[in-house]
Picture 1: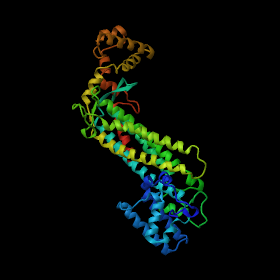
Picture 2: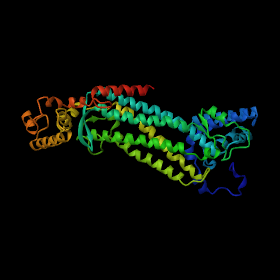
Picture 3: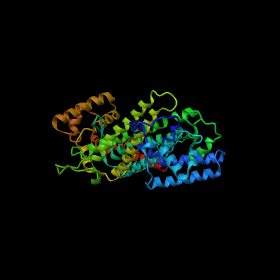
Picture 4: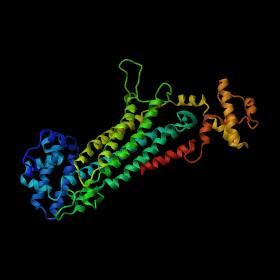
Length: 458
């Protein structure tokens, strides 16, 4: 039989079955991790006396030769060898002879692929943590430049209260900070070694699983061999975190699309992150944030797909689990591209300060401060709320904003009004009045930015 596992079989694999069940098309992404795991495994086998020193040296030399071929993109993958493990083992045997077949002593493809994915996700997760830092730094850069920039704050997509643009954009900093913390915490569950668990029950050979874990830099070893080969929680956790990150990115992208429209004109994205129209030459389309918003769906779909695959599986390994890889790899690729684009897009974004300032001067978003003003003068909040509603209605009926109404008219609604009401209603005063911790006043926003910088440096 041509298969490395073909001893028990009397027929060749059906061509359609071979094509349908093969995973080399996508699991070759783990080629370097697979060789890294094999180098650790063979080193341990030599130390434990399972293989001779000469055999270990031969296998190590062969694996390094194959690794160089993979890095130089000269390695020939074959669908007939099904997966990355069999491709490398076949090449190893061809390179160094039958001694290459001893590499698989004391392990199974079940613990081998699990090891590959643990190593792969460990590296990618650490990379994503650093990419998030770059996005956060871009946000801090915009925030520092716009502490005094006043933006209409929204609830229900209706203007609510004047806020600092820095305060608004820093909200995304803290979303990403939580995402970064989730990724950091997930490393504790990613950095666990399944190597040496065998197919499901361990092995009869005198191996040292803690030694391979040490060589590979894992923080721990699975204490249960069945769990070691059947656990995909670490992938689910990563994909769940990725979905949350993409949700946050999508919310920011939605605001960039809105703010960049002529109806808002609050920001302008750099030309390098936009495209034009094939028929309307005046158009500048925010394609990047639109695509980031859309790609959230595929990341969410990958998570749901794997949850569905795993939900009814008996222990231990099942072929169904081959379906854990494509969604994970797609999520990694999507998140990588997203974070690479996001930092420079935010950094190069132009904030239209004058447009924002004009917007807060032509609305009723300072109305709440009349309530605070009247309460401080002795009114109950509920009475003040009713008075404000009547004043706003008066303004709407007469085409006046709150700063346009004269003091005499204000006094008709309440004798508590004095000329200082016009100072209270200034957008900058409204913004700076929110000086409670985490508020939008300049002083609080500056403190928030400094706190953010501390998080970035830790």
